[in-house]
Image 1: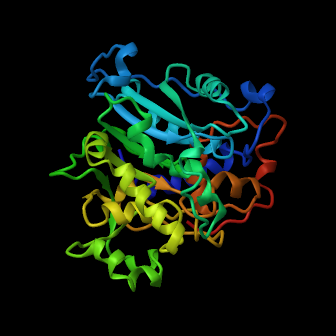
Image 2: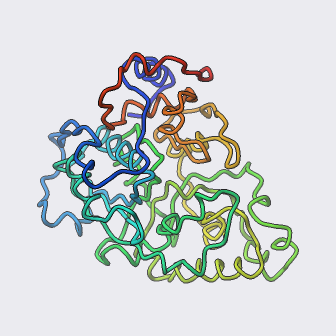
Length: 362
């Protein structure tokens, strides 16, 4: 069930007493077993089909979720997983596909052990993304975090995941799901649409591309005859079968090469998605991406919640809730993330952690 504003306010107030503020950015191998608490066991409801655990990875009735996983955002990833299984009607019928960088300071086997220690019954697999795939394609953007090669791994999901997987939900690591993920999974991509995501047609679409792009008819004609709107690539329902048929990875790579030569945008991996899919995506209810909670991409500012029901909270932007909580300068929305945080706080007084906190009003 999605969260009402009353429930969100209750979580906010409760988390002030129940959850301390701290985070993990980098860690050593010998510390890995002490990073997180083991999550509660969440079991399927009586209506859920009984599926063979060994065949889940290719089962089309399973909810498939893809996420990146790395040391810097590990705390966010663990919280996101926790939120999905906590609110899912059939949590044992969810399969997670985690994408790790081949250049990470923490190897995939370590990441696998950490996830297993937190979620012993979780069905998942860790894949390795080779940064050489995008080494010559990534251009500098307005924020350094957006230049991380792993940020582009979502472009290669159709290549990384098994070909038997025809559909997947992609989630950023700074998201929290507060509704039954099955609802998002059940959304149909009509016609030939390959991606489903909330669209924001009131946003100024022109700002996502440079004046050089708009002044060049060879580039700008890509949107001719389309009502292209902004959509956030941190939450997407993706038809991998259609993606493979359309060879969309290569299409996105073409625009990334243009960007290297002509500088037609400033914002990381988002604009090439807009160029390929803008005006031709399945519009999903806005409740499935309450985005922008991290504030502006350049300034760590606080944002308030958008009006309407909420099924997913997304801290896109510069500020991350675990970082702001650590700094004792959280925004009020960050306390909505805290109940899903499973990081261990050895030696800290939970009540003392509240001293000196400053936050905006909810």
